[in-house]
Image 1: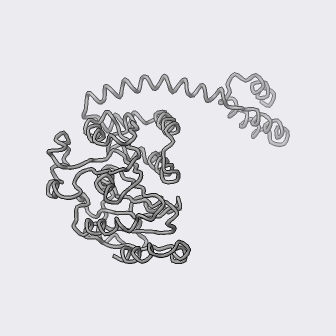
Image 2 (image 1 turned 135 degrees about the vertical axis):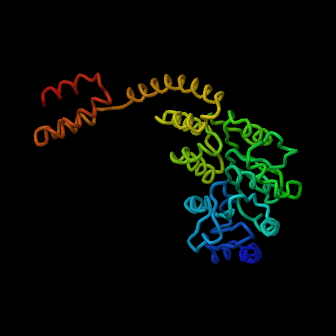
Image 3 (image 1 turned 90 degrees about the vertical axis):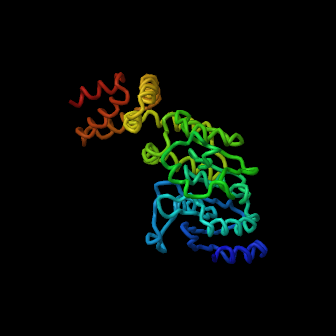
Length: 343
């Protein structure tokens, strides 16, 4: 637990002496959790992350170059990072070595400018469970699980709940405890279990993404950088631009295969399929209107100028450029005239 010993000495030093000892990078194995850290400046935010389900590494996967979930993202944003990566499939951050480490860590990070927490699903559970202990200031949670205690969340009947019962769900840090933390929770309100978990976080700003799903569709969203873009906004500015977020989710809905993928992911639920079908019909009309607005806003004059400039030396290339311009602005008489001339 090199980090704990180092922080205990480092936090006692004046700021100028602290800076002479950074960056500090390393990792420790805490039972069935691996923690990796990169400390650069107490005047910058400290981001604490916990990995989501699906990142099921084993101890033999841990090398010097191994990066836990969100570790590289934090480094690129030039903030301090302590990233907790669970090992194994069924792991809910309950190992006694991890709990002891976090209890020892908590009083040593109070000197950082701001303490942030970021997690998805299972990782969101851990952020919420340790938020008060770590005195987190702000958190960003994607469809988090608030607890696997069946008495507190009897509606969570996913198979993962039964599997998780081998852990203690009555002891310390088994349920959300945000303390004074503020921030954002992002989830799909049409997912009844996620919606019920989200209701247990009333102090956070709720951002709803219809059709986002929980895990099946998460990979698809990640493909378009959805999680990353929101996380970067949060890490860099300690807040989410809600207007931009809503525009981003609107743009995401215009992806050609968005609803095809959703339908495939939810084929076993007739009710969900009907809901998606209705939404798809509405958004198809919205998309057509949106695309027309985009076309109307495109200035094709630069393409026309390029074509005219090179029409004598490279007539075939000029035709191709004009054909692209015509696709963007099919009713432009100048483009039509020039094409007839060159052909």
